[in-house]
Length: 175
Image 1 (cartoon, rainbow, N blue to C red):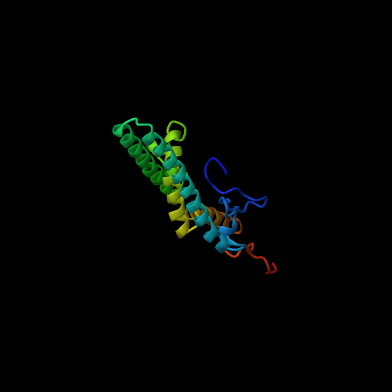
Image 2 (image 1 turned 90 degrees about the horizontal axis):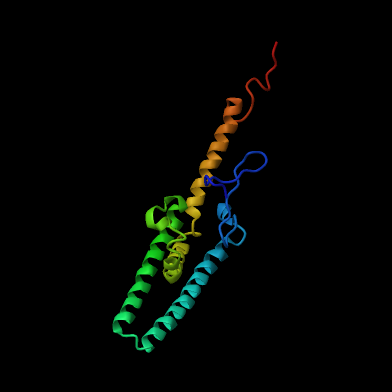
């Protein structure tokens, strides 16, 4: 992926679509197993979220059994809930609008890494919900790819001065 978030180009200058995790470039034409992946990806995200929730439950249950007190237990449950909500909001925005749209606290990867890890279940649930609508991130990449393809087509048409790509006067004899 380029730094300016434009699709890479082939040798002839035509844009190439970016690959989406689990889908590759099958999202462009929606071929080669796209529909099967559209079923399996949400199921995988849901199973991963269930496994993450189970791990969080064990952790919270361990704190509850340690007799640390009701206040500590309540703080831990609230922290997990807040982190899950923040991670879900960030992941949803990332999948619907792209990384460029992340601003402020949502754009922080390193300093809020612990929040994103603790809230991973919320992020996975957002991924699950988004994958029910489309391949996660497809709308952002499709818009970017279509813009690049349109620019390429305009450049190609502009070189000859004609939209059909033929050079002016071709096919006619000069006398």
